[in-house]
Structure formats: C-alpha cells, structure tokens
Length: 242
Image (tube, rainbow, N blue to C red):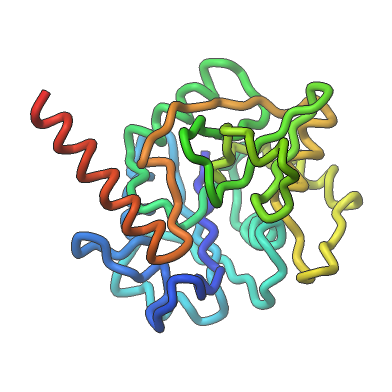
C-alpha cells in the first residue's frame, strides 16, 4: 500500500504567512509529523501532493518521498487524481496534511483493520462530543454522504459522527468514477467526499468509526490548534497520573 498526503491547500484560515503544513508544533513541522506516521511496515511509498514549486520548501525537512503537483487548486478530488500516476499499488491510504498528532500506531491499526476484514474501500470516522466544524457522516437508506458543517440542516448538525478525511481506496475504482465527476460551481472544485458518496451508493464502501481521539483531529485555524494542544496535554497528563 502507498500513502497519499494532500498538502496543496493554502491554509489561509491560520492567519499567518507561514504555510500551515510548515507550522511547527513542539519544534516539528506539521507535514513532517504526518509523514512520520507512515514509517510503518504497511506503506512502501509516500506521495505528497503540493502546489507548484512547493517541494523547494520541503526538501530540507523531509526525504524519501515522491512529489505530485496540483498546478491549479481544483479541490481535494483533483489533488487525489494528480497523485495517481505515481501509484503502483492496488490500494492507497489518503490523509490530509493537517492532522498533526496522527501516529504510526493509528495508521497501523487502520490498515490492519482494512486487510483483516477484506475491505475494498474504507472511510475513517470519529464519534465526537462536540462535532463543531467537522463534516458530518450522514447515513440515509444505507447510503453514506459527507456534509460539511456549513451545508448541514438542523437535524444534520445534531449528528456526532464526523469525517476525519482519512480513507483507504482501491485505486481502480476511481477510473469508474471519473465520468460521473461533477465540479462544484460555487468554488470551482471537485470534492473527494463526492467520490466517497459514489462508492457508498455502489456498495463499495465500509466505515470504521473511532471514539473521540485527538490523534485523528485536523487543524483549520489557530483556535482549533489551541484546542487540540490542550486536549493532547490533558490526555497525556491523565495517562501519567493513572
């Protein structure tokens, strides 16, 4: 299996000049933290999707990776497609670049579950006490759809199962989907979550839902980063005392 890390976004909501994936947490850039999680027996190659020439900012930080380039920001589905020419395995694990505390054990647990259960495509969700800002996993008539918070109605906002943005895909399934791919005209982007919905409709998707865990949470802005650091500190203190 190969890993695809989606890192071509601007991260403007962080409100700083430094690109989000280069933001240091405890002295380690976020992108390096994510890449370190894939030092596992299951992943033979790491492919990172970046903006044009962004590899020049990463070369001193990371090694033994393959770069794919999203020349025009056309969304997460397009970013995934840009990585495919570099893929040689039948399956890939796809993760966002802004989950700073994702670790090797978590990745091995996810991939191990995938192989042990003979799954074709897998979406990783999480049950949260307060799911604010996360996309909700909505199940209707056994079909799964991911709806971003800004698009949720009142009933959907009450759902506490959220999307982590982590998936394992059987690579050939994307080529069946491409003729059905539609752009979202409001922002001129293709969404990876639409592909997930397609897989669900065609009975090619399983889900693995974790209890709430800071290791699966992404960072959107300075406030979410501060909350995540507090959560990590609290959990580590709790484990130390008990």
